[in-house]
Image 1 (cartoon, rainbow, N blue to C red):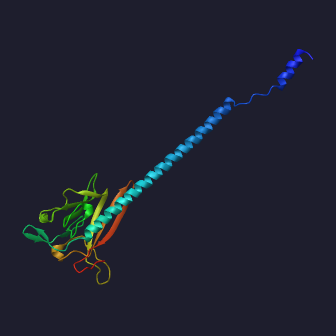
Image 2 (image 1 turned 60 degrees about the vertical axis):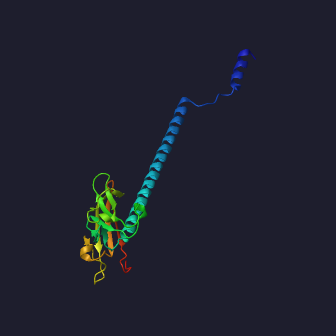
Image 3 (image 1 turned 90 degrees about the vertical axis):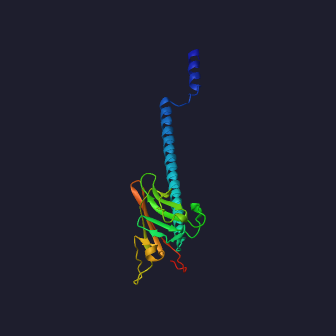
Length: 220
């Protein structure tokens, strides 16, 4: 056996080198990039969904708190005359777009101690909504009810109030857009509050009824 044959046999016994070709590397990198991109998009969508859900929950909580505050305040309406210096004035002025009255007790959420004048009304324009204003009962004769408003429901529009003395003879409740204590001789049995909050292209209407405890403890 000559040297040439020995060399050929040696080459045949040498194992073939294993590895990735350039094409295989490019395909692997492309597939990995697609996987990473898909995972990233999924995480962003999940994060956005969670964020929207949390914001919706916060808005719902704020709305519940505002409605609860309005209910507590309206239920505390005092049917007795409000003291205004040497004079006394009956105060429960219910109109279609505002409500002013005297509280019989303090409303902690409003930072009020003792009896206060309270007004719920709409503040129009950017940054507006369903608002509340308060004042001393000694300002009953001059107070307009719109000073230094605090926004309770941001973005609320078409705010309206209606009032009822209770069910009529047929059992149905009759609602009026106005209620003046001087004319009626007392406070209504119930107040209905309605408003709309726009959310993008959609809008959400909120409506609720608040009963007022009368002097004899009656209510609904």
